[in-house]
Picture (cartoon, rainbow, N blue to C red):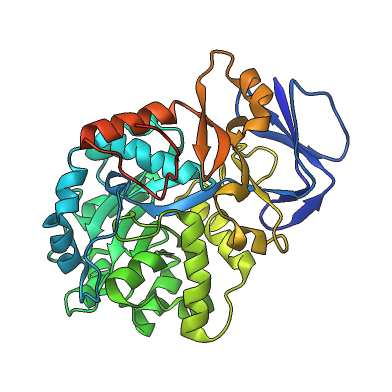
Length: 413
């Protein structure tokens, strides 16, 4: 079975294609071809001409267990540890704990989906998320090893940096860790520790990196290791962002993540907007919009070693596609996008989120009705699963209707 998807533009993301459609196989979920000819398909999705098909967005750093609101413990801090202490001592942390972990994961998954994200890196030990990730409406990266941070006072996730990194290399997985998330003496030793463990390699993916020196960056570039930035969280906790211009100057592979909403942004769209603003404030010049697109598509796909399947709209790749309304120009449409600019989200050739006028298409994909109508940001949408019931259950656990800006749903309770 085939699906035909015809937007106004296709961004691969390395090139822009006009007047062509995407043919994908519904059975294996992969793109078959990008063609300018018309061939009858089992499901045909002809989109408005003012729409752009991008590879499904990849959120390179989230903690789905922390899917709650508002932010807690505003800085400036000298290290993540003082923020973490403030979080765990807060009434909101106790309030959040009333919600079962699976429902926090559902909140995080839907938060990402309605902002155009199809794949998330959930940085947490496997024993926490293994029971949930196959039950979510988005993709969560399964194959990784990890540490919490490379410091003496980290949370001791995994079996140790050297063991986890060796396991990553043996299995060709990414080894994911926070690094130098702070400016105290211990935080600033992060890269030195990694080098001592022999764990700074092309398999290493490091998040935040606020304290990285020029020498650290040279070592990272030489090792072909990867960095992930979370500007909203960094500014909330430390009143600064990473030295991104210096990262880019060394051709380091850089990706963008949201962190959890309790310190970071409400979604990848807010993260992009803040990145654009904060970079201009820090350097007096704009970060290129095309660079930002790469930071949520092909760059994280490379970092997490999934770039043979994700991060591109090309034949043979999984058909994860985010359709965005044209606003300004092709690349600025990403920067300018908000909830109602996400026209449609497709995962594995199937529509999982769209405006209500696409209901007949939803019915073709889900004849058993495994989707629901919701009012999000004042517009009726269709979405896989039963988000209305999930939100009512969350309100039930709390005992009141909780407003969560990352899921702006209109729902009686």
